[in-house]
Length: 92
Image (cartoon, rainbow, N blue to C red):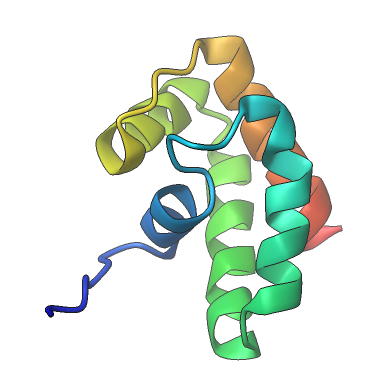
């Protein structure tokens, strides 16, 4: 069985945690699961990526990434809320 390789740590989060079986309201719990289950080797790049995406202040970009990586359609408000929630969990 082939192991899936990810170009972006955010892709890994969307694909492995924020996948089709999860509800948008589960996002904070999913971030906690990531922080509790992953090793520092995966947590540090995720923190950096979340900070980078947050500082872009571009919800359309978040929306596009979530759709590309997980085929999930978010509206702009959900995309903005998503990156703000992730920033609070990973970076504050």
